[in-house]
Length: 58
Image 1: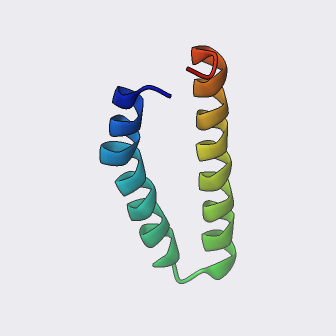
Image 2: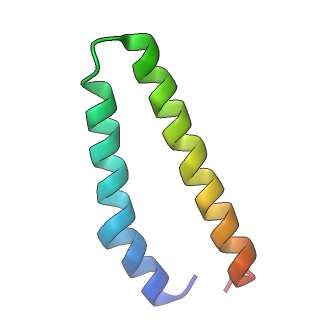
């Protein structure tokens, strides 16, 4: 990944993911909270794989 991509991830994506994890953990319904965390993890993995494939690993 290039430096601009890493800066984007560090400035925007990581804080967003941390905030979403915190927000999902605030849910009193534990089953839905775990489901939300799984969905969030899958979305992050899919985004990373898609970005890697589109950029050719550069």
